[in-house]
Each structure stands twice: as C-alpha cells, then as structure tokens.
Image (cartoon, rainbow, N blue to C red; front, side, top):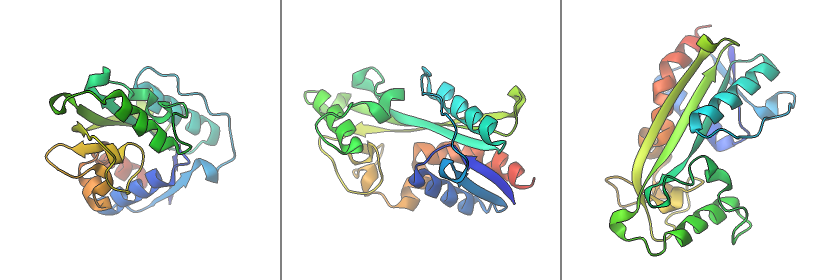
Length: 207
C-alpha cells in the first residue's frame, strides 16, 4: 500500500479525492492528512498564483514527512472583481459580518457585487493540484481545472462548502451547493483537476 499525504486538514477535500479514486478504480493508495503525521511548520500561502501555492504546500509536506504529497490551492475568480478573490478566496472577508468563515467570504462578495448586472456576473472556480513524489523538479506534477459559471444574487442550497451557495455553474440553474456529490465531482474545478491527475495517481499506486 503506497501512502499519499493530502497536504490539508479539510476532510471534505479528502472525501472528494476518495470519490475520484473510487471512480477511476484506483486501489493501493492509503490517504493521509496533515492530522495523521507529526506536525511541522507550514509555510504561509504567499504565492501570487494558485500554482505557486499548491507546489509550495506539496513540497513542504513531502520535505517534512518523506511521503508523496498532494496539495490543492483553489478559489473563485470573479470577472467584475478583476479576478479576485482568487488566491485570497479563503481569507477574503477577514471576518466580515459573520462568525462562519465561508458565509463571511461569500457574503462580502455578494455585497461587493450588489449593483453588478446579471450579464456581468461571470465567475469561475479554479483548482490547481500539485503532486510531489520526490525532491527533484522532475518529480512534480501540476494540473489545473476550471469551472465556469456566474455569481448568484443570494445564497442557494446548503450543500458543498466555500462559495458553493453563490455559484451557479454554466448551463445550470442550481447553485453548486444544490448539486449532489456525484454531479459536482463530474464537473467541478477540483474534479476536473483531479481527473487530469489520475494517470499520475495510478502510477503512484503501482509503487
């Protein structure tokens, strides 16, 4: 059994990866999170791009544990906000208006877009995944997935996490928070990125 360290404590991301592996028929990987390995000092996410942050997180996790590491950096890019929150998505609000971080973040985006007309509410979820299997530059695999859509006028649904309740995927009338897990995996930014990573994960599972 090959160990793979998910450089996160977000159990929902771990569950998503489990579903992707199951769907691809990949066995032989034991998934761990940062809670399963000795703690280490995690570098702050200071990269200007999702790619920089994902690679840095995966490299840190590999260096500290010696275990192949997978890191994801993701967020939402809103056209009317010049591509923001982008890499700042997880900390966009700074505690604005609500004790729940997710609610605070998307509430601030809704407030900032209060007067933006429907035809200019384009947005996209972005996910970049970096898989580091060794210390060398040639032992890093980086993939990117994007999920286009628009920002809703109000939160819809209570599933998912992050900005899901205010994001309506292209070609749908429901928010991402109203989709089933299987529907979301098939089209989401992280699902699209992880699907591109399947060949590398299958090779890792073979040992």
